[in-house]
Image 1 (cartoon, rainbow, N blue to C red):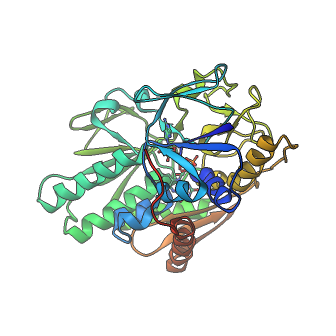
Image 2: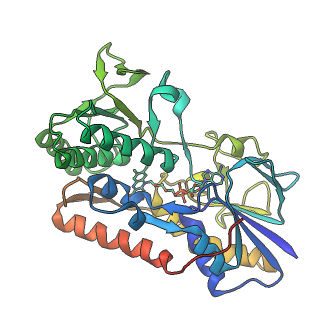
Length: 375
Ligand SMILES: Cc1cc2nc3c(=O)[nH]c(=O)nc-3n(C[C@H](O)[C@H](O)[C@H](O)COP(=O)(O)OP(=O)(O)OC[C@H]3O[C@@H](n4cnc5c(N)ncnc54)[C@H](O)[C@@H]3O)c2cc1C
């Protein structure tokens, strides 16, 4: 009996579990290691903050999916991976041996890069901690306490969070609360088309969201943040949306990684150093480099499933080439969204409806079944 360990319940592994549910594996034990029994779909999280969705509507129950796929869910985080010994160690001290390993554990946030951040700020990842911190903003707002919020990071996640927070605070009746964003680029949504950046900037101004562009946060304190121009920004709640950082246990595993510590894989999604190991999503450094984005994690799912099956059967693997451009849809808090693909950009209520349809369909696809086995 061979053992396949799926590390992390990320986007690509949803497709792997779906495929295994259709095509049960004979003589293969499948174990899913995940710290949580639900995968919150990050694309809908700003909608939850803004009040458009209940949290349950954004969550995919992993136990049900694992059960249908004949996989056992071990509800633990991996803390150590030894690629030479082929073992995964979990936070409760378990050592799980594998014949094949597939990693889709996303990324962390570089919390130690800013002094004080580990104590006084909440990173957007892991999402469970972030959700708890957002609920505390709502509680402070509803109780009439100070609830000023600062988002560090002016990319898509940071800007979406700021729009959503402002919209929700307004609904709670706290238009007085400050929502500010600090970004190192001159304009928000760096990398997206100029027209989209310009629209985002204008919308932020209209909604009273402060934009501090071309600035770097040097330190975070109990009262807010200090910027590189010597100024300070007061805030009760500080969120870090400063981009992805590799999990340290991948760099320490003995797997080949890129300079940032992401697992290097070839075009078949197999580790370039350890042929029993596969990786996809934000934790992987693809042969054709792509931005860390849910789009590429989703697209890697079906080829990952195919190649895991082929690897277990001893068949030749198939190459996958990620698409060149991704569609970006950034909600702006109140029933409208910005969209971009390549150099083209859009904004409007129809873009929100489009995003809403795509996101709901994605979650519903994987929500279909009831309870599965856990331990
Ligand atoms: C607020 C926000 C909004 C976003 N919106 C979009 C968007 O609209 N479109 C888009 O393309 N991208 C978006 N992104 C980026 C997107 O979330 C990521 O690129 C995407 O989630 C990566 O998918 P993944 O499968 O690699 O990892 P993830 O979705 O992060 O999943 C990783 C899984 O691994 C698990 N895990 C973590 N650590 C361990 C461990 N030690 N052991 C075992 N399991 C572990 C986690 O619990 C999780 O289930 C957004 C990000 C944020 C923060």
